[in-house]
Image (cartoon, rainbow, N blue to C red; front, side, top):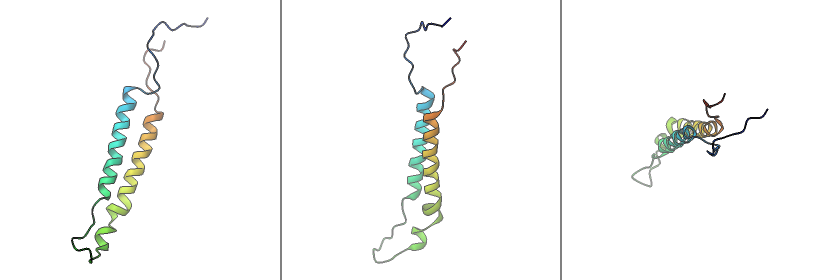
Length: 86
């Protein structure tokens, strides 16, 4: 025998938990872009390569951004915990 749904509540693909995780992932991506800014020089005729090509801007910031995008994908794909199942 098949069970008939009696509730009229629509089933949305994403839950509140997914949206919270999406906001966290977006904040991680913004943090990565904030780590990338800077490195300019006051005098345009002076090139400061050590500041511009630092570990933070070349390695750390892109890794943080990639982690943020991976976190976003996981947040979208995460299935909600359904406590109402019988």
